Structures are given as C-alpha cells and as structure tokens.
Image (tube, rainbow, N blue to C red; front, side, top):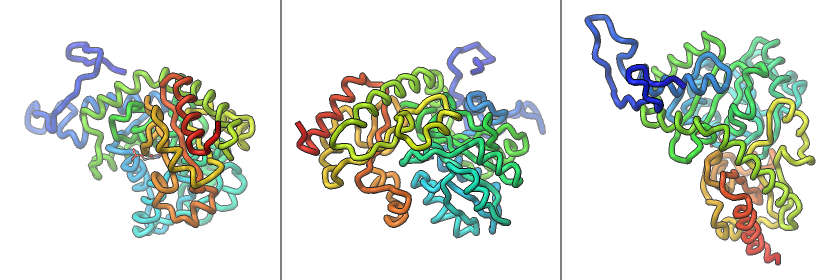
Length: 372
Ligand SMILES: Cc1ncc(COP(=O)(O)O)c(C=O)c1O
C-alpha cells in the first residue's frame, strides 16, 4: 500500500472531495471529479489488484455493482454460463433485470469442465463461476473451466468472495476477471458495503474503469479507507477464522442433530481434491443441515455469540438461513433442484474464541433438538 506522497502518512488519507481544482485551463493533476478518480479509492484499487495478482483493480459501492459492471461487457443475445448455486442477489440481478435486457443465463455444475464444455454454445460469451458456491459450498474447477473458456474464446469470471485472495487467486489459475463482494473478507469488519473487479488484461481493466465512471456506483473515499484498513489485517483474520472454522466443522460433523455438513475442509467433501488443488485452505464458511427443519428457528434464536445476520467474512461470527434470507429470491423449486433445503444454515466463522463459539453452537443445538 502506498503511503501518502505529500506528508508520508502511513494511513492513506481520506480525500473527502468531490472535485479537484485545475492547474490551468485544460490541465488537471490527474484528478478532476471523484466519480472518475479519487486518491483514496485509487489506493484501495491498487491494493485489491496486488492481492489478486492483477494489473487493474476497480472498486464499487457494492459487490452487486461490481457484478453489474462486469455484465456491461455483454450484449443482448449473449449467453453467460453460471455456477448452478449462485448467491441469491447475483441470481436476482441475472434473472430479474439482465434477462429483460436480452442477456441469457444458463446454470451448470462447474465442477466438471467436460460438462461445462458441452454447454458452451454459439451465443455463449462467458462463464461466471462461484467457488465454493454460496451456500452449498460446491467446488468449481477453476483451472479446467478457465482453460475451456480460453479455448472457446470466451471470458471466465470468478466470484472469489468466499475464499478471498489470501486463499485463492483465480487469475493465476487462468481466469480473466475476478469479482468480490468487498463487504465480506476484504473489508472484514461488517462496517462497509463494497465490491471489486480485478483483471490482468489492460483492455478489460479499462472497460471496467469506464463502466465504473459511466454507471457511477463508486466506492466512497471513506469506504475506500475502511477497505484499505480491513485489508491490512486480511491475512491474520482469514488465518484465524479458518483455524476456528476447522474446529467448529469437526464439532458439527459428529453432532447427532446435524444431518449434513458442507465444508471443503472435511474429508467427506466430494470435491475436496479439486478445491485443494486451487486454494490454500478450506476457508471460514460452513453450511450445514439440521436433522429437523422445524428446529431451525429455535436453533437460530438460541445462538448468542453467533449473530443471526445476512453476511459473511467479518470478524463477528454470523449465521444465516439462506432459503428465507440471502437466497429468498430464488424460487423454491430451483432451490430444491440444487439441493438448497429449508433445513440448511450457513455459518461464517469470525475471530472469536473457538471455545466460546463451540459452546454457543452446542447450547443452541441442545435447545433446538433437546439433546443433552
Ligand atoms: C458470493 C457473493 N457475491 C456477491 C455478493 C454481493 O455483494 P454485496 O452484498 O456487497 O453487494 C455476495 C453477498 O452476499 C456474495 O455472497
């Protein structure tokens, strides 16, 4: 991260300005209007680009704004092949807005590149991958799918929100574009809504910057600063949360009131090898199904240290009920088709004491299932 050039301040200053005074007619200092460029935002953009191993980072006012900017690369009639278990908000954008603008979306299991290859048609222009997926933790084969995309002359886009660049760097695996909800691990403190797009392709980088300026969904100077501050502790937060998540996953895996658990850190995860061939760890998000759907409300209400809230990747442990919260906009039959059941909860492990977390989850499971 660059220090401030004027005074050497270690924390990048918050340039809370909309405009910049021109040096003279026709001459500015590289900044004219903060929707186009802002020094604090630029510093955040350099940081995310460096983390992902890209050459250009562009940050937005939300993860959804970042995904929207990527979609400006496509035209009416183009088809985008997507992971079949996407974050509900991404699905909503695709199905309820962009479909009406003529884009087409098809959903496929990205774990098998050969299946993906078969689904690429004349109008397919990109693959849009989430891995692990939200919330079922399905694993895509980034290398394999990106290679096929390249062979077919189409783009590969990876939403890397769940792993963060600390654990997975899709550009190095062959992907063209990475997107993030910076609201999650990058920001890390549940205090900002933001998004990022990173690429190593100068033309794509320029087009993303143009989309940012043209659409105007920019990250504010203050939120850019929060993002920079969050990134300073990304490595220790992710390491700690992941370590704790492994302890929690082991506890859940043997609990009689947990029917199924979805976490690539466990030996039973069906694409564990693929995951570990492309990521440096299992991450800190665990989804699991309770043995009885009717016990879900009791379980969620009984939790005290773990907060019932709609996000992930922050220092606080959060739990959500995807089918009625984060993924409520996906029709029930489509939720069922991919295996998202009302018994499923998604836990994002924070940096609290592992003992406190396990104790909290244990007492809530006891209350929910009346286990002793
Ligand atoms: C995987 C994934 N991508 C994108 C988003 C959207 O990000 P935001 O909420 O910052 O708009 C989310 C939000 O939960 C997400 O989980």
